[in-house]
Length: 265
Image (cartoon, rainbow, N blue to C red; front, side, top):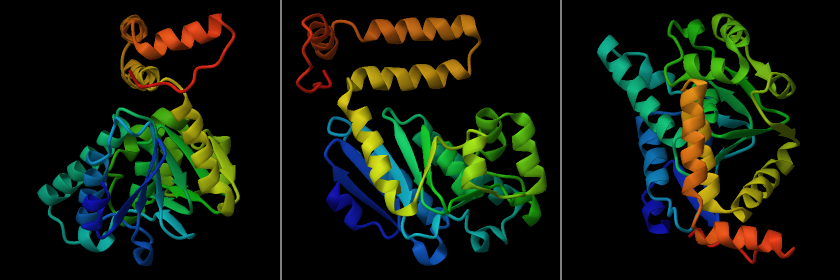
């Protein structure tokens, strides 16, 4: 993984125990997303060792910006067809993050505008610093959100609030993002990464097969009606039985002891 990333210009990867940390590292451009950055984000996720990693943190370099949006310079001259293709590129990468087998935590350390808000919404959980700003300002540039903003924002905060944010192009601060349920928690900038690592470590302590099955069941169930969704859960539930971790977890509970580390088997 280290070797893979040495070739990357805008994305870095660090393995911290069972936790992978993906950092978008283009601080002079406020970590804006262009085609190259999107390609590198995809490559970073493709290279994660799923046997050795149980949770991922996605963040941006610097203290000003998580991701300030997609690169306007690159977008300004696109044709309709090129615009649609650029939207597909971003959407495909973000969908890969959303459906990534293990949980992904966004540590939003500043501006999360446009594509920045959108990539954070493709993560399972969003934690942010107190200087974070969220928004979908695209209509002020003559376009719609193009990397999932019209779809995920409404699912996360409700249609009314999402429409208000998207139609007005109005940005919201960290406290409002927390109030409407866009983020799970707000921390002082200096404490954000520690909080994200702490949460990732809590996830990594649990049985990985079960955590992955939960993510898949929640994601797939949200897009199904309740009768189908319950079947999705039944299959996820059943898939955990006969695993070493299920046997060890239940045995420890019955014997009033603790599991000495789940094995991911």
